[in-house]
Image (cartoon, rainbow, N blue to C red; front, side, top):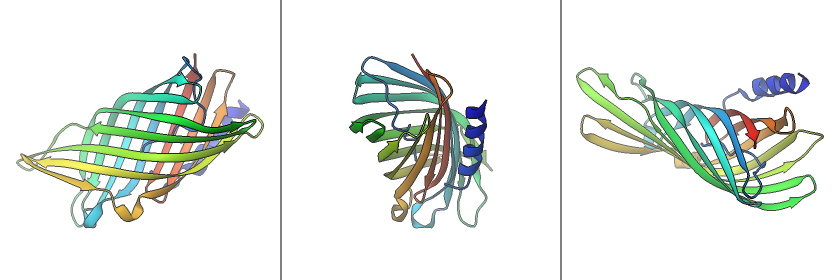
Length: 226
């Protein structure tokens, strides 16, 4: 109960605007070991290039990670997500939830006692349902890319981590057959990551992660080791 209470407090602290794909933290499966879990990832604000407005998104995933080696893992996810795109001086376009999926790899660069350093690459693609605005069909895809470098230090049973990343979001949209791609603002591509792994027992833990500067985002997951 104390761990759950602490997780709730941390979640509220991190719920200030902070966002690209979640980094998973520095806890990685060993060789031939699986991790699974359920995750919610919320993008509160991401600016697009050339004054094309902002993006928001909420995504829900089932997670699966596999240890290829003790120092290398592959991360997969599948679920659903929406897109809310707000052009400047226009009404927001709300695309209802549709299929979302992602993949990534993590590479442990350093480990000694309670310290870990992990490099990661992650990609998420969100394919919400079409909407009709007036007499025109609108369709959208969100592609979310990032590379990250994280460092953690275990304090008692909790493992906080901090790091940096380069990230980019592409907003691809169609009005009827007219297709356009808008990238996120390149001036806001470097971000800060701050998170925690909080164990509930030997095989179950919570991960809470906030993302800042490049975007404003929050990820929360329950994870299982087997």
